[in-house]
Image 1 (cartoon, one colour):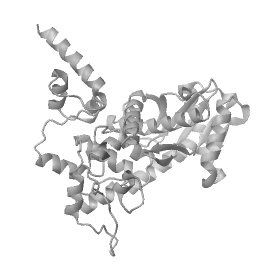
Image 2: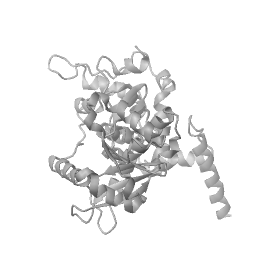
Image 3: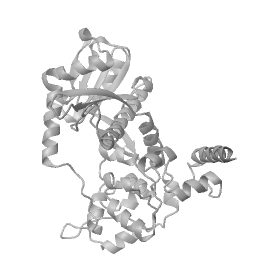
Image 4: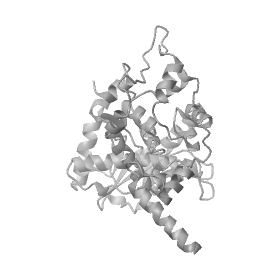
Length: 366
């Protein structure tokens, strides 16, 4: 068994969906999350066993509203969606063709998706314009995760656009920034997966646009409105994190061989090991807690409690961390800028930029 699998123990790996993969990019500097997700550990089960359950998950009302809104957008062969795509992408009316990949059966969907996009990228006329329920894949530390974007639109000038349908409202042209950011991270996962697939098929991965089409209800009504969202920054962070997860050997080398996050159930179906033993194992791996973890990670309350006990008070938020490539706090950022802290592996470019900013600040003060 590989060391990363031994870290998970005897339980099977938990599969990743797009929402979980998107959350990886929310905290690229967290070794604890990288190792647990790389091993496929069930973080939700671990958090509940530790006594720090996270209140994640949508309400039944929100799920129902989301399903109803998506059905409206896709009704009559995506007629409403086509109207919006013509506006934001300039999609020619005469060339629209709709494919529902779900109709071929679950076991064939991934292969059928690859075949359809291969034909579309080659410019074959019967390949279609809209693809509903395509099945993409992405590699997570040696494990394949299958993903289903809402829709992928193919524009006839050779560009693919991912379409993400969300039920949060756009009011007077403005939407909740946190909701938009979460949608952008999730859409970036689909863009990356589609680019990877096209590259494997021998096509230009950049034929998948970095601008995704976000569809939301307008002004709390059911009338949908579409806008383009640039996900280049989210893609860059996601690539860094996934590359880090596929090369976890350095992190694993720093851990004792006997360390495991095993959640093997006992006779009652709950993890047999004690919560204290699991907590001790987790504390052997550094975490990078930030306030934004409360909306993205199942272990957020455990890590928050740990950070409070350690007296952490200068933690940076997600947006700043994304820009700084995982730098966790003000003290660390200042140390890298001043040169008093040696950058860790992967922080060299960020450290160079921070030192340049510090020199500019000093020049302005003199």
